[in-house]
Image (cartoon, rainbow, N blue to C red; front, side, top):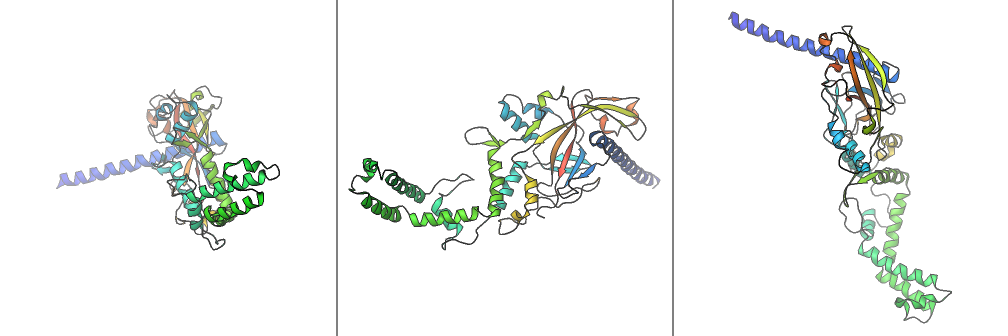
Length: 385
């Protein structure tokens, strides 16, 4: 019985020690983050509101101990320059950020897949029909059945263009008579006969009225503000891509300065921090910016009307808008993402560091080398608003 009691007390004692150590590690991490933010931003505030929180927050976060640069370095080997830059950034950093145990952890999905799905969900659906034709009917006249985003003209549109071309030849050669040289028009003796009969053929065999009505439906939708806004996002997504082969491409995310220059970059600055036990550590720190011209959440924030209406998936939560803190973090499909990398090198403690095992800078196997210390993370406000 006495042995059982001792075992119970021992288990509870170990649990209490574990909780105490976890609390000490969290306190040490928070104190270091405040000092790191002071070195980087001139303020000890770790969570900085962007436009008073209207655009979210900019948060200094630590990467989990042991995060390596190897994956990024490998992404830059053996392929062309443009592809390697995009490949490295996409494979490593273009992922939504989650907070686990106080650290910034990159999620399993890519930002590209989240953004692509979001664009599909936000694409405006049918509006008021023109000439009693709906959008879905118009698309059947204009486009062949598609796979993915690439569209091919329908057989109706192909026939329409053939007859349209004949009319253009007629009009262009009216004064000179050159239209008579076209083999498709040799049966006609006068321009008037050719123009009248070919217009009738265009209506009968070239689906002129149907195609004209369908084009008006699409044009009417694309002239609305919602369509213009959506097309701006869609066009940027398609424009800023790097081809892998004839059928595949990846988004063009730019890292500045590029990884090959990190060791000798002018971005480095000297910094220092004081542990809770009073031990000072000196190090060099640098911020590396990530640019994603294909991704524009700020435009979505400024144009919330894209979330309103008969979109296919209006319930998709991009971000719940929770204000980040030491214990809270927003959730959603893309509530947070890496905006800048925080690099560290030449980590040197001024005295015996064995007394501060919980300090974040104690976890590096090669403290003199370039390592990832953390990220400046952009968290989004509530989307949809």
